[in-house]
Image (cartoon, rainbow, N blue to C red; front, top):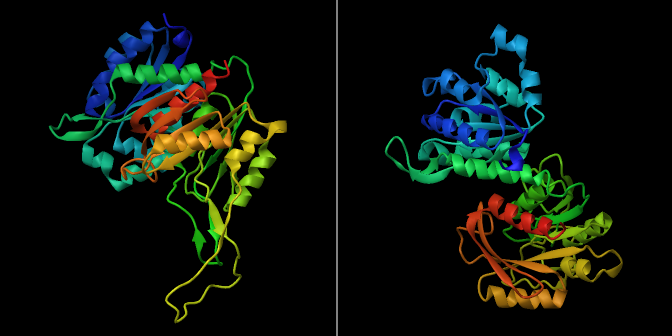
Length: 404
């Protein structure tokens, strides 16, 4: 028996999709590992699997109706949500995702989730067109900003015969994800670590209207901050302009300019871990004009720039309060590894994460990334293309392992 699941309590919400049948295998796997499982079967879910088959596998009652007097007298929807260590929604259909994003609570499942104080993990499953629809993407982003986690979906053949992204993750993959998540809660074994993560772009203004910036969305830095927080690390996120919202467990400091980011970094010290994922402008205008720069008959405009402070170098060389682990990021379109190694040597950071931004499908403004990590002994480890959430989990796992 894997110790991770011994005495762990999982509340499984089964929504109305053809993939609901997979939850029976998932229950078997989790039960073999020692987990106790209670289930909520939605009205739609009951069209695909029966409460009898679920009850026989979980050895527990199946909860279906918020107005079920028998169930409510035994355990109401509030205490049911408090009972669990984690709430898993599988399959998470487009309908229940939309309902949760809107904060609706018109059945037992949505009422439990809205009232919950536990981590909620969604396992999306739907037709590829439904998954890629802007409304679904918007709803998923809302739920991510609320702190919900997601597993999948995968690319494959659908029950309807179409092929694409939207297939529910396998029971084995869901189990592996839950195992890693629950391990995160125990891995530090009482150690108290503090981290700062910088993310997003900076803006250095020419005048009240125009500024110098870049295409960074902040997604990778936000996901790293989220993952470190999930491990129990007290995390401060220093973010340039971004529409992303971190979970409530993270202390967020919003800045605009490179100088503001440096000042916020100084105030956050001391920390054990510093991850400089922000795309800080290397240069800023030498002079800020208080009024808008007007168009003239001249075909050219000459602007002088000054070098911005280097936050990564400051952290790496700040001997009195240097973090135990300083990690930089490097993004380029060619000779990425060579440039990153030069940067690492010059700035004296411990690790450097290399992004190849020559591919527009990954990196800046994308939900996916592919990276290489260069360690201080010049060893290089590649992490293949994956979601930024998965990349962040891998980076954070390596960070934590450095302290245990």
